Image (cartoon, helix red, strand yellow):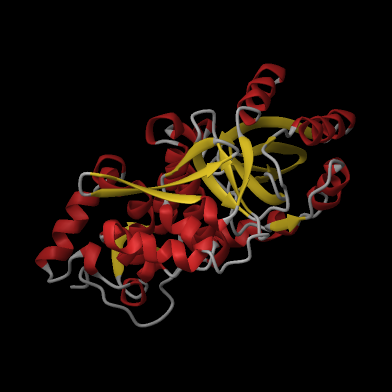
Length: 345
């Protein structure tokens, strides 16, 4: 536990909060490509997602696209425009040790600062250690926004969903530059399949404070998710997955969907032969189309990949699968109305 958290603390401290003004934004061109960067305090910081930084200063996506499509002609016009933006208005970015911007944030900082979560992590862990009903389950650093997720099992809660499918519950604490987040999660014990859902399972955002132990105990003591879990699992076990639910897992995996989702290529072929391209079906229609897959099986695929294949598929895809599984668990089956069923004889 200590070694994992110490490594995460050091990784966090390799990131900096970099304040900048609109006039610090620069554009360079390499061949046919244009690149956005920020020059602050004598250092250049690379911006991989220019849309985020342009949106932060109030530039619409359509205008950003037009500017970057022909920067030789348009950038000087843009620079003249941003001179009219309040020169005292400060924006912020989180930059890693390579001076790459990983996230754009709102900040009142005036100088570059090292990011440090040590006090909050230590306060949380002291609280967990002092309470017998909680157990540290793991921690993950998310490089996409320099945040830390710490998962804590509640040793007093366990439900048997049938046939040895045991669930335990806990709380996932998200620590970021600007706030803390709390989400109840479930731990699947079948096949040692542990999975945490960060979205839509009793989620709450809380104000930034160093004393997050008290926030944690106030939130973790609530058991609404435990009470509702059995009914939600039974609903999934007795439902066929919609195209939308299957596609949500496939979209999280991107081009690798066929490698990880059982029968996915076969399902796509069956729908194509029936006149439907799975990737082209709109969300509204997809919610009303049957697959021949059990929803609980699709749900299990998402949880298994998220927990057992995290290193293989990457943290971002694992977190997106968490979100997808969380929506299935919370919202229940899509298919409650008249639907399109290509398997109906």
